[in-house]
Image (cartoon, one colour):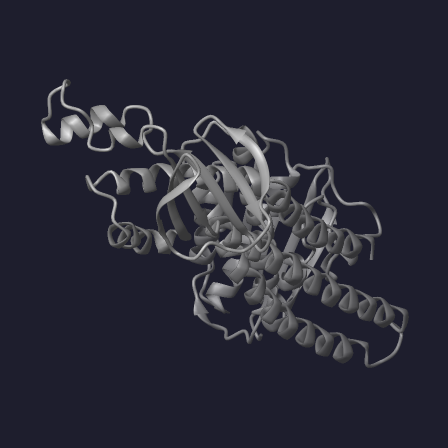
Length: 414
Protein backbone atom coordinates (compact mmCIF):
# COMPACT_ATOMS: atom_id res chain seq x y z
CA UNK A 1 0.00 0.00 0.00
CA UNK A 2 2.78 2.43 0.94
CA UNK A 3 4.66 1.54 -2.23
CA UNK A 4 1.58 2.27 -4.33
CA UNK A 5 1.19 5.65 -2.62
CA UNK A 6 4.87 6.35 -3.31
CA UNK A 7 4.37 5.41 -6.97
CA UNK A 8 1.31 7.67 -7.25
CA UNK A 9 3.22 10.51 -5.57
CA UNK A 10 6.11 9.99 -8.00
CA UNK A 11 3.75 10.15 -11.00
CA UNK A 12 2.06 13.37 -9.89
CA UNK A 13 5.27 14.90 -8.55
CA UNK A 14 7.18 14.24 -11.75
CA UNK A 15 4.35 15.64 -13.87
CA UNK A 16 4.21 18.78 -11.72
CA UNK A 17 7.99 19.11 -11.82
CA UNK A 18 7.99 19.05 -15.63
CA UNK A 19 5.05 21.47 -15.87
CA UNK A 20 6.46 24.06 -13.46
CA UNK A 21 9.95 23.76 -14.95
CA UNK A 22 8.50 24.77 -18.32
CA UNK A 23 6.31 27.53 -16.85
CA UNK A 24 9.02 29.08 -14.67
CA UNK A 25 11.50 29.20 -17.56
CA UNK A 26 9.15 30.35 -20.31
CA UNK A 27 10.57 33.91 -20.43
CA UNK A 28 14.20 32.77 -20.94
CA UNK A 29 12.97 30.41 -23.65
CA UNK A 30 11.02 33.22 -25.36
CA UNK A 31 14.09 35.46 -25.09
CA UNK A 32 16.20 32.79 -26.76
CA UNK A 33 13.75 32.51 -29.65
CA UNK A 34 13.46 36.31 -29.96
CA UNK A 35 17.23 36.59 -30.53
CA UNK A 36 17.08 34.02 -33.31
CA UNK A 37 14.06 35.63 -35.00
CA UNK A 38 15.54 39.14 -34.78
CA UNK A 39 18.78 38.00 -36.43
CA UNK A 40 16.89 35.98 -39.07
CA UNK A 41 14.53 38.87 -39.89
CA UNK A 42 17.39 41.37 -40.12
CA UNK A 43 19.25 39.09 -42.52
CA UNK A 44 16.11 38.62 -44.64
CA UNK A 45 15.47 42.38 -44.94
CA UNK A 46 19.08 43.02 -45.95
CA UNK A 47 18.57 40.91 -49.08
CA UNK A 48 17.09 43.95 -50.85
CA UNK A 49 18.45 47.47 -51.26
CA UNK A 50 14.91 48.90 -51.21
CA UNK A 51 12.35 48.04 -48.53
CA UNK A 52 8.95 47.92 -50.23
CA UNK A 53 5.80 46.69 -48.46
CA UNK A 54 5.60 43.81 -50.93
CA UNK A 55 9.17 42.68 -50.23
CA UNK A 56 8.72 42.88 -46.44
CA UNK A 57 5.43 40.95 -46.68
CA UNK A 58 7.16 38.18 -48.65
CA UNK A 59 9.83 37.90 -45.97
CA UNK A 60 7.19 37.82 -43.23
CA UNK A 61 5.31 35.05 -45.05
CA UNK A 62 8.51 32.99 -45.27
CA UNK A 63 9.05 33.37 -41.52
CA UNK A 64 5.40 32.71 -40.60
CA UNK A 65 6.09 29.03 -39.99
CA UNK A 66 8.54 30.10 -37.26
CA UNK A 67 5.82 32.14 -35.56
CA UNK A 68 6.50 35.60 -37.06
CA UNK A 69 3.24 37.57 -37.40
CA UNK A 70 4.38 41.20 -37.89
CA UNK A 71 7.54 42.90 -39.23
CA UNK A 72 7.99 46.67 -39.00
CA UNK A 73 10.86 49.06 -39.71
CA UNK A 74 10.63 52.23 -37.62
CA UNK A 75 12.86 55.31 -37.86
CA UNK A 76 12.58 58.07 -35.25
CA UNK A 77 9.07 57.01 -34.29
CA UNK A 78 7.80 56.79 -37.87
CA UNK A 79 6.77 53.43 -39.33
CA UNK A 80 8.60 53.26 -42.66
CA UNK A 81 7.27 49.88 -43.74
CA UNK A 82 5.04 47.28 -42.12
CA UNK A 83 3.82 43.76 -42.90
CA UNK A 84 1.18 41.85 -40.94
CA UNK A 85 -1.48 43.05 -38.52
CA UNK A 86 -0.10 44.19 -35.13
CA UNK A 87 -1.98 42.75 -32.17
CA UNK A 88 -4.03 45.37 -30.23
CA UNK A 89 -2.69 44.30 -26.85
CA UNK A 90 -0.86 45.85 -23.93
CA UNK A 91 2.82 44.97 -24.03
CA UNK A 92 4.80 44.41 -20.84
CA UNK A 93 8.59 44.94 -21.02
CA UNK A 94 10.79 41.97 -20.15
CA UNK A 95 14.45 42.21 -19.17
CA UNK A 96 16.51 44.31 -21.64
CA UNK A 97 18.72 42.43 -24.05
CA UNK A 98 22.14 43.47 -25.42
CA UNK A 99 20.82 43.24 -28.99
CA UNK A 100 17.20 44.25 -28.51
CA UNK A 101 14.24 44.85 -26.22
CA UNK A 102 11.71 42.11 -25.52
CA UNK A 103 8.07 42.76 -24.68
CA UNK A 104 5.45 40.21 -23.72
CA UNK A 105 1.72 40.26 -24.39
CA UNK A 106 -1.23 38.07 -23.39
CA UNK A 107 -1.98 34.80 -25.12
CA UNK A 108 1.62 33.73 -25.75
CA UNK A 109 2.48 36.73 -27.92
CA UNK A 110 5.84 38.53 -27.87
CA UNK A 111 7.50 41.50 -29.55
CA UNK A 112 11.21 42.24 -29.93
CA UNK A 113 12.89 45.51 -30.97
CA UNK A 114 16.41 45.62 -32.39
CA UNK A 115 18.67 47.79 -34.56
CA UNK A 116 18.13 47.55 -38.31
CA UNK A 117 21.89 47.39 -38.88
CA UNK A 118 23.42 44.90 -36.51
CA UNK A 119 27.12 44.46 -35.69
CA UNK A 120 29.11 43.13 -38.65
CA UNK A 121 26.30 43.38 -41.20
CA UNK A 122 28.11 46.00 -43.30
CA UNK A 123 31.09 43.70 -43.67
CA UNK A 124 28.78 40.85 -44.61
CA UNK A 125 27.11 42.93 -47.35
CA UNK A 126 30.46 44.03 -48.80
CA UNK A 127 31.75 40.45 -48.81
CA UNK A 128 28.59 39.28 -50.56
CA UNK A 129 28.54 42.02 -53.21
CA UNK A 130 32.28 42.69 -53.59
CA UNK A 131 31.80 46.38 -52.74
CA UNK A 132 34.78 48.41 -51.53
CA UNK A 133 35.13 49.74 -48.02
CA UNK A 134 34.54 53.30 -49.30
CA UNK A 135 31.21 52.44 -50.91
CA UNK A 136 28.31 53.35 -48.58
CA UNK A 137 25.86 50.71 -47.40
CA UNK A 138 22.54 50.72 -49.32
CA UNK A 139 20.67 51.13 -46.03
CA UNK A 140 23.11 53.61 -44.46
CA UNK A 141 20.24 56.09 -44.15
CA UNK A 142 18.56 53.57 -41.81
CA UNK A 143 21.47 53.47 -39.39
CA UNK A 144 19.18 54.66 -36.58
CA UNK A 145 16.17 52.58 -37.63
CA UNK A 146 14.68 49.77 -35.57
CA UNK A 147 13.25 46.41 -36.58
CA UNK A 148 10.16 45.29 -34.67
CA UNK A 149 9.24 41.60 -34.89
CA UNK A 150 5.97 40.45 -33.38
CA UNK A 151 5.80 36.67 -33.00
CA UNK A 152 4.23 33.71 -31.28
CA UNK A 153 6.90 31.67 -29.44
CA UNK A 154 5.92 28.34 -30.96
CA UNK A 155 8.64 26.30 -29.26
CA UNK A 156 7.44 27.48 -25.86
CA UNK A 157 3.81 26.87 -26.87
CA UNK A 158 4.58 23.30 -27.95
CA UNK A 159 6.63 22.66 -24.83
CA UNK A 160 3.91 24.08 -22.56
CA UNK A 161 1.12 22.10 -24.23
CA UNK A 162 3.07 18.84 -23.99
CA UNK A 163 3.95 19.59 -20.36
CA UNK A 164 0.28 20.21 -19.53
CA UNK A 165 -0.79 17.02 -21.35
CA UNK A 166 1.86 15.08 -19.43
CA UNK A 167 0.60 16.54 -16.15
CA UNK A 168 -3.01 15.60 -16.97
CA UNK A 169 -2.09 12.06 -17.99
CA UNK A 170 0.12 11.65 -14.91
CA UNK A 171 -2.80 12.71 -12.72
CA UNK A 172 -5.16 10.32 -14.53
CA UNK A 173 -2.68 7.46 -14.19
CA UNK A 174 -2.28 8.27 -10.49
CA UNK A 175 -6.06 8.18 -9.97
CA UNK A 176 -6.37 4.83 -11.76
CA UNK A 177 -3.47 3.37 -9.77
CA UNK A 178 -5.01 4.68 -6.56
CA UNK A 179 -8.35 3.04 -7.37
CA UNK A 180 -6.60 -0.18 -8.33
CA UNK A 181 -4.56 -0.13 -5.12
CA UNK A 182 -7.68 0.35 -3.01
CA UNK A 183 -9.26 -2.54 -4.89
CA UNK A 184 -6.29 -4.81 -4.20
CA UNK A 185 -6.27 -3.77 -0.55
CA UNK A 186 -9.95 -4.60 -0.18
CA UNK A 187 -9.31 -7.89 -1.95
CA UNK A 188 -6.52 -8.79 0.48
CA UNK A 189 -8.90 -8.23 3.41
CA UNK A 190 -11.12 -10.97 1.96
CA UNK A 191 -8.15 -13.23 1.22
CA UNK A 192 -9.72 -16.24 2.98
CA UNK A 193 -12.66 -16.40 0.61
CA UNK A 194 -12.60 -19.22 -1.91
CA UNK A 195 -13.00 -16.96 -4.95
CA UNK A 196 -10.02 -14.71 -4.16
CA UNK A 197 -7.91 -16.11 -6.99
CA UNK A 198 -10.51 -15.55 -9.73
CA UNK A 199 -11.34 -12.10 -8.37
CA UNK A 200 -7.67 -11.13 -8.30
CA UNK A 201 -7.17 -12.36 -11.86
CA UNK A 202 -10.19 -10.40 -13.04
CA UNK A 203 -8.93 -7.28 -11.34
CA UNK A 204 -5.50 -7.77 -12.90
CA UNK A 205 -7.12 -8.00 -16.33
CA UNK A 206 -9.14 -4.84 -15.68
CA UNK A 207 -6.06 -3.02 -14.42
CA UNK A 208 -4.13 -4.27 -17.43
CA UNK A 209 -6.69 -2.83 -19.87
CA UNK A 210 -6.72 0.53 -18.10
CA UNK A 211 -2.93 0.54 -17.85
CA UNK A 212 -2.57 -0.13 -21.57
CA UNK A 213 -4.71 2.89 -22.46
CA UNK A 214 -2.99 5.11 -19.90
CA UNK A 215 0.48 3.94 -20.90
CA UNK A 216 -0.14 4.77 -24.57
CA UNK A 217 -1.77 8.13 -23.78
CA UNK A 218 1.04 9.06 -21.37
CA UNK A 219 3.74 8.29 -23.90
CA UNK A 220 2.28 10.50 -26.65
CA UNK A 221 2.73 13.88 -24.90
CA UNK A 222 5.98 12.63 -23.37
CA UNK A 223 7.49 12.04 -26.80
CA UNK A 224 6.68 15.59 -27.90
CA UNK A 225 7.78 17.08 -24.59
CA UNK A 226 11.13 15.30 -24.64
CA UNK A 227 11.70 16.07 -28.31
CA UNK A 228 11.18 19.82 -27.96
CA UNK A 229 13.35 19.97 -24.83
CA UNK A 230 16.13 18.09 -26.64
CA UNK A 231 15.91 20.57 -29.54
CA UNK A 232 16.49 23.41 -27.07
CA UNK A 233 19.51 21.59 -25.62
CA UNK A 234 21.06 21.33 -29.09
CA UNK A 235 20.93 25.10 -29.59
CA UNK A 236 23.97 27.15 -28.54
CA UNK A 237 23.04 29.47 -25.67
CA UNK A 238 24.72 31.08 -22.69
CA UNK A 239 21.44 31.01 -20.74
CA UNK A 240 22.29 28.51 -18.00
CA UNK A 241 18.75 28.73 -16.67
CA UNK A 242 17.38 27.61 -20.04
CA UNK A 243 19.79 24.66 -20.23
CA UNK A 244 19.02 23.58 -16.68
CA UNK A 245 15.29 23.78 -17.35
CA UNK A 246 15.59 21.78 -20.57
CA UNK A 247 17.79 19.18 -18.85
CA UNK A 248 15.23 18.88 -16.04
CA UNK A 249 12.40 18.41 -18.54
CA UNK A 250 14.34 15.72 -20.47
CA UNK A 251 15.37 13.89 -17.27
CA UNK A 252 11.86 13.83 -15.81
CA UNK A 253 10.32 12.93 -19.18
CA UNK A 254 12.68 9.94 -19.51
CA UNK A 255 11.71 8.85 -15.99
CA UNK A 256 7.99 9.04 -16.82
CA UNK A 257 8.64 7.29 -20.14
CA UNK A 258 10.30 4.37 -18.32
CA UNK A 259 7.37 4.22 -15.92
CA UNK A 260 4.90 4.21 -18.83
CA UNK A 261 6.86 1.38 -20.47
CA UNK A 262 6.69 -0.66 -17.25
CA UNK A 263 2.93 -0.11 -17.03
CA UNK A 264 2.50 -1.13 -20.69
CA UNK A 265 4.65 -4.23 -20.17
CA UNK A 266 2.43 -5.22 -17.25
CA UNK A 267 -0.69 -4.63 -19.36
CA UNK A 268 0.57 -6.90 -22.18
CA UNK A 269 0.77 -10.10 -20.14
CA UNK A 270 -1.49 -11.90 -22.61
CA UNK A 271 -1.72 -15.63 -23.17
CA UNK A 272 1.26 -17.93 -22.62
CA UNK A 273 1.78 -20.35 -25.54
CA UNK A 274 4.33 -23.06 -24.65
CA UNK A 275 6.22 -24.87 -27.42
CA UNK A 276 9.26 -27.18 -27.39
CA UNK A 277 12.29 -25.02 -26.62
CA UNK A 278 15.90 -25.44 -25.50
CA UNK A 279 16.11 -24.15 -21.89
CA UNK A 280 19.79 -23.26 -22.34
CA UNK A 281 19.04 -21.06 -25.35
CA UNK A 282 16.35 -19.26 -23.34
CA UNK A 283 18.78 -18.68 -20.46
CA UNK A 284 21.59 -17.54 -22.79
CA UNK A 285 19.25 -15.08 -24.52
CA UNK A 286 18.31 -13.58 -21.15
CA UNK A 287 21.98 -13.24 -20.16
CA UNK A 288 22.78 -11.55 -23.49
CA UNK A 289 19.83 -9.17 -23.07
CA UNK A 290 21.09 -8.06 -19.66
CA UNK A 291 24.60 -7.63 -21.11
CA UNK A 292 26.46 -7.63 -17.80
CA UNK A 293 29.83 -9.36 -17.25
CA UNK A 294 28.74 -9.98 -13.64
CA UNK A 295 26.19 -12.64 -14.66
CA UNK A 296 27.39 -16.26 -14.56
CA UNK A 297 25.36 -18.99 -16.25
CA UNK A 298 25.43 -22.44 -14.60
CA UNK A 299 23.78 -25.41 -16.31
CA UNK A 300 23.72 -29.19 -16.48
CA UNK A 301 25.64 -30.71 -19.36
CA UNK A 302 22.54 -31.90 -21.19
CA UNK A 303 19.01 -30.60 -20.89
CA UNK A 304 16.07 -31.85 -22.97
CA UNK A 305 13.70 -29.52 -24.79
CA UNK A 306 10.87 -28.23 -22.60
CA UNK A 307 7.39 -26.80 -23.23
CA UNK A 308 8.13 -23.07 -22.85
CA UNK A 309 6.88 -19.81 -24.27
CA UNK A 310 10.41 -18.77 -25.13
CA UNK A 311 9.90 -15.00 -25.36
CA UNK A 312 7.82 -14.86 -22.16
CA UNK A 313 10.20 -17.01 -20.12
CA UNK A 314 13.14 -14.93 -21.36
CA UNK A 315 11.22 -11.86 -20.15
CA UNK A 316 10.90 -13.44 -16.68
CA UNK A 317 14.62 -14.24 -16.49
CA UNK A 318 15.67 -10.78 -17.70
CA UNK A 319 13.49 -9.19 -15.00
CA UNK A 320 14.96 -11.43 -12.29
CA UNK A 321 18.54 -10.85 -13.46
CA UNK A 322 18.15 -7.08 -13.52
CA UNK A 323 16.65 -7.12 -10.04
CA UNK A 324 19.55 -9.27 -8.83
CA UNK A 325 22.15 -6.93 -10.37
CA UNK A 326 20.54 -3.94 -8.69
CA UNK A 327 20.39 -5.73 -5.34
CA UNK A 328 24.05 -6.83 -5.48
CA UNK A 329 27.12 -4.66 -5.07
CA UNK A 330 28.92 -3.15 -8.05
CA UNK A 331 31.45 -6.01 -8.23
CA UNK A 332 29.25 -8.83 -6.90
CA UNK A 333 28.49 -11.77 -9.15
CA UNK A 334 24.94 -12.87 -10.01
CA UNK A 335 24.21 -16.50 -10.88
CA UNK A 336 21.60 -18.03 -13.17
CA UNK A 337 21.39 -21.81 -12.81
CA UNK A 338 19.38 -24.06 -15.12
CA UNK A 339 18.69 -27.62 -13.99
CA UNK A 340 16.20 -30.47 -14.25
CA UNK A 341 14.93 -32.28 -11.16
CA UNK A 342 12.84 -35.31 -12.17
CA UNK A 343 9.99 -33.89 -14.30
CA UNK A 344 10.56 -30.26 -13.32
CA UNK A 345 12.72 -27.64 -15.04
CA UNK A 346 14.26 -25.11 -12.66
CA UNK A 347 15.66 -21.64 -13.35
CA UNK A 348 17.23 -20.10 -10.25
CA UNK A 349 18.63 -16.54 -10.04
CA UNK A 350 20.86 -15.81 -7.04
CA UNK A 351 22.19 -12.42 -5.94
CA UNK A 352 24.62 -11.28 -3.24
CA UNK A 353 22.59 -8.40 -1.85
CA UNK A 354 21.13 -7.78 1.58
CA UNK A 355 18.53 -10.52 1.23
CA UNK A 356 14.78 -10.39 1.83
CA UNK A 357 12.96 -9.19 4.91
CA UNK A 358 11.56 -12.36 6.55
CA UNK A 359 7.82 -12.66 5.98
CA UNK A 360 7.77 -10.57 2.77
CA UNK A 361 8.61 -13.37 0.33
CA UNK A 362 5.03 -13.76 -0.95
CA UNK A 363 4.20 -10.05 -0.84
CA UNK A 364 6.90 -9.30 -3.43
CA UNK A 365 4.74 -10.82 -6.17
CA UNK A 366 1.75 -8.57 -5.46
CA UNK A 367 1.26 -5.49 -7.69
CA UNK A 368 2.93 -2.26 -6.55
CA UNK A 369 5.05 -3.98 -3.89
CA UNK A 370 8.76 -3.10 -4.18
CA UNK A 371 11.66 -2.23 -1.92
CA UNK A 372 13.42 -0.06 -4.52
CA UNK A 373 13.05 3.72 -4.43
CA UNK A 374 12.18 4.00 -8.13
CA UNK A 375 10.62 0.58 -8.77
CA UNK A 376 7.07 0.20 -10.06
CA UNK A 377 6.29 -3.04 -8.21
CA UNK A 378 4.92 -4.64 -11.40
CA UNK A 379 7.90 -6.70 -12.64
CA UNK A 380 7.55 -9.64 -10.25
CA UNK A 381 3.75 -9.61 -10.63
CA UNK A 382 4.22 -9.96 -14.39
CA UNK A 383 6.81 -12.73 -13.83
CA UNK A 384 4.37 -14.68 -11.64
CA UNK A 385 1.59 -14.39 -14.23
CA UNK A 386 3.89 -15.74 -16.95
CA UNK A 387 5.20 -18.61 -14.80
CA UNK A 388 1.67 -19.57 -13.75
CA UNK A 389 0.76 -19.56 -17.45
CA UNK A 390 3.30 -22.41 -17.72
CA UNK A 391 1.49 -24.16 -14.81
CA UNK A 392 4.62 -23.51 -12.78
CA UNK A 393 5.50 -21.52 -9.70
CA UNK A 394 7.98 -18.83 -8.70
CA UNK A 395 9.40 -18.55 -5.19
CA UNK A 396 11.58 -16.03 -3.35
CA UNK A 397 13.90 -17.05 -0.52
CA UNK A 398 17.04 -16.02 1.33
CA UNK A 399 20.34 -17.77 0.62
CA UNK A 400 22.65 -19.21 3.17
CA UNK A 401 25.56 -16.85 3.57
CA UNK A 402 23.61 -13.80 2.38
CA UNK A 403 21.66 -12.68 -0.63
CA UNK A 404 18.37 -13.75 -2.14
CA UNK A 405 17.31 -16.39 -4.64
CA UNK A 406 14.32 -16.52 -6.99
CA UNK A 407 13.38 -20.00 -8.24
CA UNK A 408 11.16 -20.69 -11.25
CA UNK A 409 9.82 -24.25 -11.48
CA UNK A 410 8.13 -25.47 -14.66
CA UNK A 411 6.70 -29.03 -14.71
CA UNK A 412 7.07 -31.23 -17.78
CA UNK A 413 3.33 -31.87 -17.92
CA UNK A 414 2.55 -28.06 -18.01
